[in-house]
Amino acid sequence: MSHKNRNNLKLSFYPLTVENWPDLESLFGPKGACGGCWCMWWRLTRSQFEQQKGEPNRQALKAIVDSGKTPGILAYQEDQPVAWCAIAPREEYPVLARSRILKPIDNKSVWSLVCLFVPKPFRRKGLSARLIQAAVDFAKEQGASIIEGYPIDTDKDRYPDAFAYTGFYPVFKELGFEECIRRSETRPIMRLTVQKK
Image (cartoon, rainbow, N blue to C red; front, top):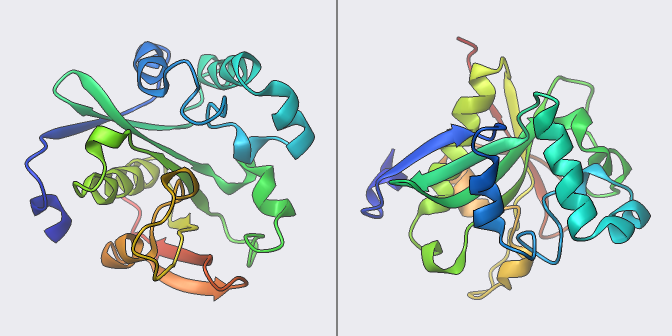
């Protein structure tokens, strides 16, 4: 795909496991990627999330990994972790079910791609497209047939990075995702249907 030619980063992608958990800690840093989130935003009620910001969220995500679940994938440049993508069956993200804008559009079995984390030095290098594609490949290997994304669609040249964690519309479009519904001007629900192996 064309997005692979945008940069010279030689990347490899691996599911998050107990073995490479320290790499995620290194990537997220002491702030847990964004204000103590530790990628728990989609998994908790707002009050739970606020109470657990920081170390409790880190422990909660670690418990998911320790249980044998894989909550996402890490991108590496050589041995350095450089990006993260959270992807899992939609039912693991109860926030989606409660969302007026992102609530399910049907009862089909869907995997949801809810978060991308790319540190500043690696942004604007085409990395997110490769990360999304790797997440799609991972979900497909786990038996997913529909992958759903919730990107930002904005005509603003600059959008605050802190609010761009779901990715951008043009990247999903380029990767073959199709818009299914739009309950908000800037937040479509997009889907990619894949052939199971």
